[in-house]
Every structure is written in C-alpha cells, then in structure tokens.
Image 1 (spheres, helix red, strand yellow):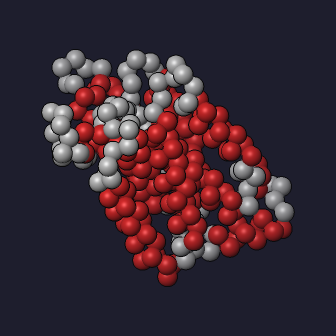
Image 2 (cartoon, one colour):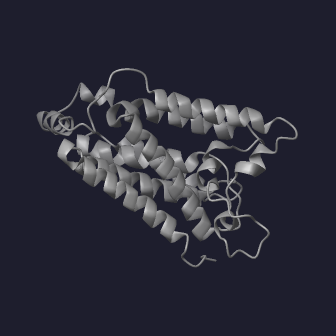
Amino acid sequence: MREQQRAQTPAQRKAQRSWGRGPVATVRAGRPLVTYWLIGITVGVFILQWIPGLNVTNLLLFAGPYVDPTSQLAAPFQPWRLITGAFVHSTGGFWHIALNMLALWMLGRTLEPLLGRGRFLALYLMSALGGSVAVALIAPFQPVVGASGAVFGLLGALLVIGRHLGANLKGIIIVLGINLVIGFIPGFQIAWQAHIGGLAIGALIGLVYARTRRRDQRGVQFGLLALIVVVLLGLLLVPVLT
C-alpha cells in the first residue's frame, strides 16, 4: 500500500484525504503496540503449552460443547474459550504459530496505525469470536486452536478499507484466495470454518469503520459493534448444523 501511494491517481488521493478526515482513520505515529502485545501474549502462551503438567492447550482450546449448556457431553460451560482459542496453537509444528504471527505483524503494522489501538483490538478479538462461532455452528465437535480466524478478520477488514482508499487489491485478493483454498485441501488440518467466520466478521467490521468514521458517528459505530457481538452470541443458540 505504501508503494501504491507514490503512484496514486488524483481520484485516489482525494478518496484517501476524505477517509483521513475522521478520527477512525487518522494515521497515528508510533509503534503498533497492540500488535506487539498480541504477538507477545500468543508466543508466551505457546511457550507455556510446552511445560509439562500445565495442560494449557486443553484449558484454552475451543470446541462447540464448551458453549452449549445443553450438550450431552461432559463439557463444562466455558464461553471464554470463544476468545482464548485464538491464543493457543498446535504444538505439533512451529509453522502454525509462526505463519499466524507473521501475518499479524504484517497486517497490524498497516491497520493499527490507521484504525487506532482500541478499534484494532476490537477488530482482532471480534474476528476471533466470529471464527469460533462459525466452528460451533458448522463443526461443533471439532476442537480448534490458533489465531487464523482473527488473522482472516484482519484481511477482510483490510480488503474493505483498502477498497475505500482506492488501493489496488489484487495482491490481497490473491493471498486471501490461496489461503482459503488451502483450508479445503485434504491432508491439511486447518479449520476452514474459523477462516470463513473470521473473514466475514472482519469484512463487516471494516465496513462499519469505513461508514462511521466521522467524530459525530462514534456512538453509532460503537452501537453497531455491540450489535455484531450480540448477534454472534445469539447465533450460538441456533440448532447445530450437522
């Protein structure tokens, strides 16, 4: 996106100036601290996963029965796993956490200064929530770990916001398409349900940010974000898809 700024057309520069008038999209100086904190917490949890006896993975992973009080399985009701599942990763290979954290670092450096720390954090956590809800609805008995749903949410938001900035989105679309297709290839143990859920919620949040970026629309923005959370939690009451 930085390279494209040097070759922007007058119309694209006008769109970006228009975007930047609101408080949501003002580019802020400084380091993307939320991105670094998210990476640090995730890596810290990953280290704890390797300590014998702590059983961190089983304590934090997500599966549908943990948010279904009527489940016939002996699973306690632990709704916080909808979020904590994004902070644990497979210990069977370093690539899982490495690729997710690399993607978070790359996307966070662009989105966090653009959105602001609070909105970026909300985007990340709500995308993780969207991914978990999709898993609960489509594959309720499949235990999942990883930040992929949240990362796909960042991609979805970047896609929508980039469209409003007039950026060339071909590269993002290609990367997104490749990662979506990989999730459906036999042999890859990837929770494509979380990818789809995170992507959809991230794109929706990106649209909310794009359409409510004026200062006088801040209340509307917060209300819409709260509504998205309520709807996601309400979807957990929908009969499980088999």
